[in-house]
Image (cartoon, rainbow, N blue to C red; front, side):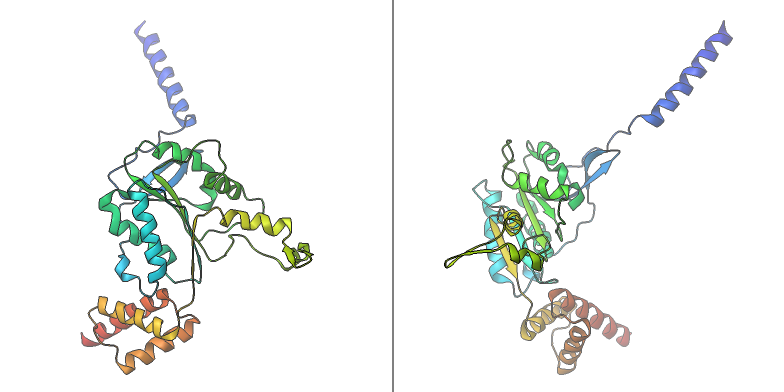
Amino acid sequence: MASDFENLIGRAESLLARLEGVLPASLPETDWSAHAFRWRRQQGRGYLLAVKHPHRIRLADLQDIDPQKKQLVANTRQFLHGLPCNNVLLTGARGTGKSSLFKALLTDFSAEGLRLVEVDKTDLVDLPDIADLLRDRPERFLIFCDDLSFDADEPGYKALKVALDGSVAAAADNMLICATSNRRHLMPEFMKENLETQYVGDEIRPGDTVEEKISLSERFGLWLTFYPFDQEAYLDIVRHWLGHFDINRLTPQTRKAALQFALQRGSRSGRVAWQFARDWAGRQALRRS
């Protein structure tokens, strides 16, 4: 009798072990004490993964984009106070601080309840699930999509379009969709699409393909454009970041090296200025040691 019972227990344990391999694993609990999160998927289900060490940068560190910064900060303050505000799209030249602005907002306003949720383009179809998860939280969440662009018929394109304006469900009041892109309308634009344009008297009527592409970017209420920096603006940013490394003077030698550094990379951007300052400060410190 005891032998039969032990055999039954053994078979039951074996069956449970096989079932555990088939059943989906439990999702990690969300650590709501974190300030930044990433949306992740596991066995077809999504969850918020806390970012333990978010990139810390201050708004004061972002130079020569004051008009864009001012509008974005004003919109964020409205959002934090529960006032009417707009979803945000930042487009334009690479390396000009588009992504860094959202990280800086988190640094400067996290004490007021601002949080950041990074969502990959492929996961935009989960926006309704994200909204349901965040809707009853007291914090205010920026849903951040970095370097966003779409090809035709991508599922994330329609999901984002519906989330911005068009779903039967009301948008969550504590959630703002924010995106950056190097493409003005988030989608590739082709020469042949201009052939669809009609001219009726003095009126220009874009074709349906162009109208469809424009319709997504138009759903962002705050749309800010960033332009390449000129030489003096680039050097201003170099000067700022050198000060970050306790180098408080832009000598003629340093100025020449900074310009050559930008020329080699084919860009005068905030990113290139930061890279030069790191390189220059490191080489000077190594020389002194």
